[in-house]
Length: 117
Image (cartoon, rainbow, N blue to C red; front, side):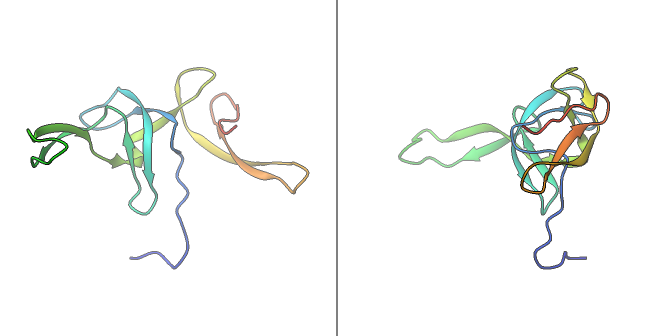
C-alpha cells in the first residue's frame, strides 16, 4: 500500500555510518554507507553486493566494457557498528535537551553511547 503524502520512514542507518552485513551473500563484511533510499528501504554500502554493469563505449570511455558496481541491499540486512566498542549494535532514538527544545539522536542499545554527533 502506498505511503501517505509527505511521510518518510525513519531508518536506523544514515549516510557515512559503518555497518556490518548480517544476511545475504556478503554476510559478515563491513562497509561504509554511501547512499540511503528511505522510500525503498535500501542502502548502498561501499564494496558490498558488487554486480557487473556493462558500459557502452563513449567518448570518455572509448573501450567500454564490464564494470563492477555496488547494488543496493535492504536496510534490514545491515547493523550499525558502535564506534566505542567496534561491535554491531541495535539502534534506539531519544531526545536530548538543548536550549532550543531538544533534538532527536540515535544511540547504541548495547553501550548507551550517542552515535549522532
